[in-house]
Image (cartoon, rainbow, N blue to C red; front, side, top):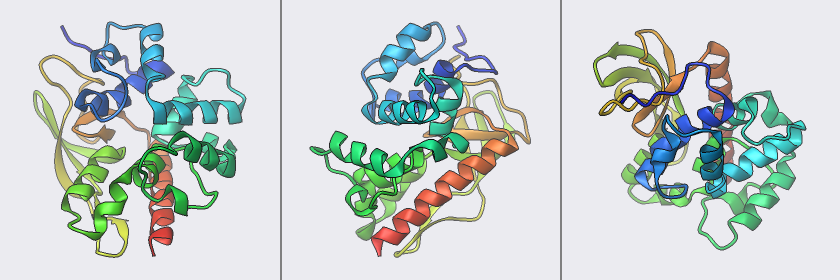
Length: 243
């Protein structure tokens, strides 16, 4: 049976698309990532989403700042994973303080060094809160690979086969001093595995979002711009505090 979320996903479905790849790998969220696949309704996915200590806090902050009662509202979820104007409604100082309290007993990256410059975007969690950024000073190969896969990246579909797509995207690079987004390279990402998909089959020329080894859906040009802006802002913040 094909597990597929509809093209015009609601917020809880959109959350499931992007949250499944790391949840399946056991990197974040509660056990049993299959809850995030098609066949489960809003109540199941909402309950599962609240087990993501990081993501759920971001969704709550965005929703509260925007005056939206549901953390799984479509625009709230889209803002967290992709970006957009709702991010500007979040008080960065209060949000940073909440994250420091939430992760007080866990190792973090540069969270203690960013002042009150928190951004309620997934890239902030990957590059600032997760500890991997601290390991770039040694052999950067493994931490850079993880940071690249964990961030939501955008790209253009170059080719499609039964299970994978070839995507042209800008990878995260490290020159020994600074992080930056490099020139476009070709990468292979799955869109289907054993009948399971997170989004409809992409077509050549589509702009898509990828998380770990999965395509999570198509992006509009506006969404690509928002994702690039949020990612770049986080990269620049990290560079400024690592010096």
